[in-house]
Image 1 (tube, rainbow, N blue to C red):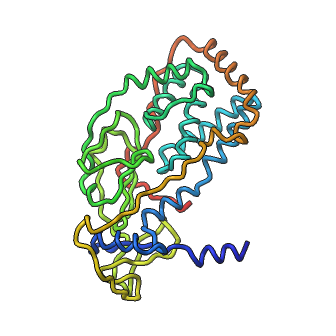
Image 2: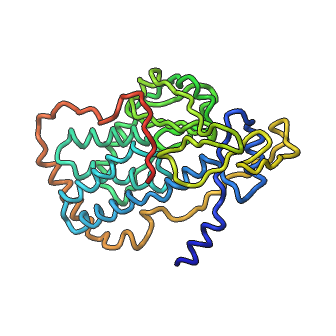
Image 3: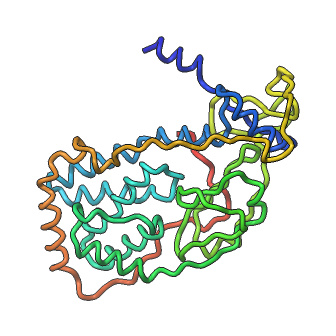
Amino acid sequence: MIVCLFIFNLFAADVMVQSEQSHDLEYQKYINENTDKISFVDHLFQKKSKDARLGELLKQAQFEFLKGSLDKARGQFQKIVDLSFKEDWNTEQRDIINYSFLRLAQLQKNKQKQTETLRLSLAFDSKSSANQELFPPPLIAKRKRLKEKLKTQVWALPKNTEKFDQVFVNGQKVDFSSGFLKKELGPLRISFYSNKWRPQSFQLKASELGEVRLPMIPLVTGGCHNPIFNTDSLTQTKLTLFDQGCTGSAQTQLAGLPTSDSALSFPKEKRKKGPKFYENKWFWIGLSVVAVGLTAYQVDQHNQSSTPSQPASPTTSSSNEPVVFGNN
């Protein structure tokens, strides 16, 4: 094991941070031509993909659900849902969240809480679909009706958005070239990533986007001989500065730099296609006793209170201060 870790560290890619004055084309060309280099943004997302919290919580929730401990299962699924807007989750992690939203809605004890859970699930990901083999038809039909009532609006993105490389909304990369975002009313998480500037995330309502202020905080200052990295709380990995004509402190000259986009050939991202988590046989072992949950759902529907309570607004932070990225 020690030998394997040593080899991994020996061949780990250098994380390149772009200086404020360097050109994007030069930086991208350098990353593309050097397979032992990785951009700062890609490095951050590699770290996020290793976050195992959702998977562990799902195992616990599914165990309680399949054995019929519905109150305990509801609590575990709630923990997953509570994390939905806390990070920019990748596709596999988002699958877990979308599944947990529906399972939590199924286990809610009254119609009002069920409706609130379904609405929040649509705010998180209105394009996700429910597996009809895993959830009761009345629940799927209710979510569909709520989805049909959604109205997409256009919101202006904050000033300085164009200076960032990537923008994510609820973990999904969005096109921000127009300066506007199409989104339904409701809570969201919006994140701004750059290889030059500190990434920033905000949890707020769509209607509050116009109030966001994006301070431009450089990731690094100084030159190749004395770079000062402003990456506290983002990563503990050793970083290398990419400056005009040099990298790190070695003053490596970069020759033959392109002058236009057409001079570059950017590799296309390749995604590995594999079975989703809910298609894994091991994960769904014991699924035959799901009838316990479905029965509980019918009982809950039968015992619902006839007087619905006032809907509670989903818990979000309307602060316009950036959410500091964790170092998990």
